[in-house]
Length: 193
Length: 171
Image 1: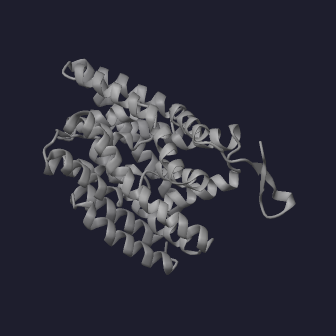
Image 2: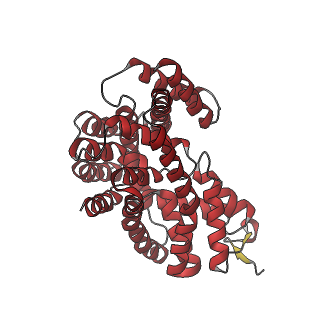
Image 3: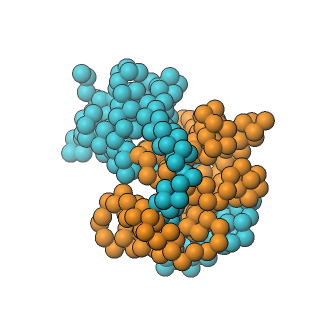
């Protein structure tokens, strides 16, 4: 295995070796998908940084950072970006397919089972409970993300505006998102966010 | 026809998916349930529950919606619809990015998006929790779970399991 050094100077130098074959890439992303119980990002970090040393921790953070400012499912974008960087278009497709293959099958199997049993009241009650609980997870995530920006009045107004327009007003996102992005960028450039 | 409509809708949504799939869940519910009537609010919530309980990326929720609307083909079309336009954009931007290098714009964009993602994620929870008429029992489960995440270090899967038990007892 050839190792390439990454990093600007010797003190921060870390070793990483990207995958060389499509098969290696596919198996790596398959393993990320298979381990993704309770969050894909931790499993992506484990497989690509700690286990296979495809990326340095800095590279990983940098890649996630870029994918988080782009639209789309973040981890899907990570697969595209890294697959492309390492093995071109075929790499991007293979990484994407590897990532989704197993989780897609699982979720579909669960859905088929659910459809078969949904009519029974106890099943419906349990699933409704999980749904309400999942809604609670979303609210908790929102609160966590809000903490660092909650002291900035412009951020609070923008958060509340998005919530009211979408949750209460039921305004289409196609209308809300462009306006919110433009206002957000304007405020952000003026250092108000 | 439904399949084409589904694919086009998710492809459009793909480019609005800032901050991950959780941001577009209220919009999906508005369109799939309110506008198209492809399923009920209660069923939408149930599929959301199945997606939350399954391992894997959040985006697979879209393939459950696709499955409900148009079977296996629908599940593939919805997933690809939501992923491919964003993937194409990622492809183009990553090429430019590696050419341009680091830019102050990245931080400006990140700070601009943060409040949007918070507002939309909270809207997702707010819309899912009571699927039709407000019900204190569902709010209790949702708020108890949120408190569990914020106050303890318990794995979220245990909190979902707690939601299942409470659902079975209360509903």
